[in-house]
Image (cartoon, rainbow over all chains, first blue to last red; front, side):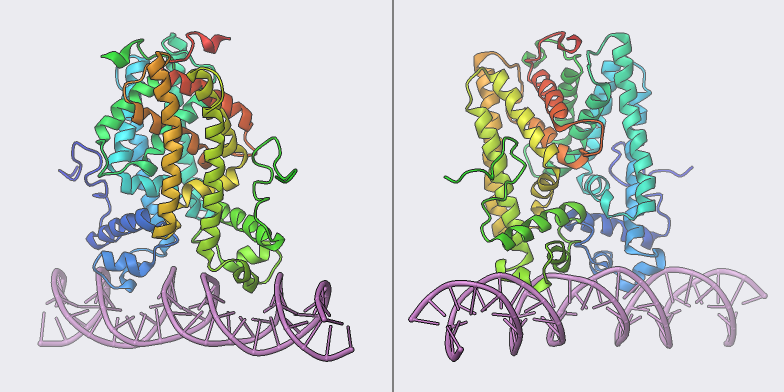
Length: 214
Length: 214
DNA sequence: GCCGAGGGTGAGCGAGCGCTTAGCGAGCTG
DNA sequence: CAGCTCGCTAAGCGCTCGCTCACCCTCGGC
């Protein structure tokens, strides 16, 4: 349909689909502010001034402050789901697909830490109906990872006692990257993605013995 | 020194050390409120009314709302550190000690989810000096876990490529339990602790092959 | 060149916030 | 029993919040 706006990395401009230019700038400003201070500690005046506009301009494009969070959360979850689906449906054995899913999911959480933080940690700030919608998306995220693990168990590649518990642990490990990852820290998103893919393969009993010595 | 107030489980009444009774009730009310709605979304009126007092009573025992969070955070981190130190300094090989540390740390995060949530996720709501103090405690937490993993690598029990990265992952896995654990869910804190201890042993290359089939 | 529409602003509303202050009543001291 | 302390409350101050409203530009269509 359109041209660029979707670079090789998934992080660059995932907000290209937000159509009026001013609305996108406001959304981007809100993501930054929510990630830095949290939803409740962010004021509409702060969002508007980051976007270079007056506080009233926000309400031309969004009904409430919560609608901003809802929009950010939905777009972010859809992106996360898309990343996992791509990895899950790629060719290759369960180990390859799981490693691919984990490393790309982690790269997204580390590289787009600003967005991921809002998406993963401000769920409770949404109202009941908005939260219900997002919870549905999260269930699909869970199902995608569980699917890969089930495949591996069926094929005998994985050795897992509690499939849903392990799924939860794998997702939890990836998601929490958004909390602790530091852009100025010693690790790049790619390095963390590779490390985590290795750790997760070990968790499901598919880590090659002696892999650490390579 | 004193008698009860410290039950077998570490969760029951860790606030026994908070001395005026009214101050403890306020602190407990604040923990509940912060865990449910987050620090910034919680009002001093809400805390006071949960404790059955007027809003002004809060300021007899605490200078500001932030002092409440600071106190909760310090006590919670000290408790977490104590749990890890106990496991770390117990007798036994690195695998035993790591499994013990992870399972008790996870049990604390799941069973005392209310407290753990505030302790682990409201760090950014603290002012600079208070945050600096808590960050120091967290460094000690990290050092405790890294110590066990280093022991295991030295003794050859563990097979770990990136010690600090793996330490971070192990801690992250445990801490994130406070985010997703549901008291009304299908798992008990003990079950999650046992599952996670197994997963972590696999992560460090110490999981007995075929353990899942037992 | 006038008009309507739509994106934007400045000023400000009602409400609720964190926190303060004046005073009250119970309980110990002399 | 007077006097003092101390835990607590009722009332409310000053401020900032999310959000609204009256109005103003700019620009395309006729």
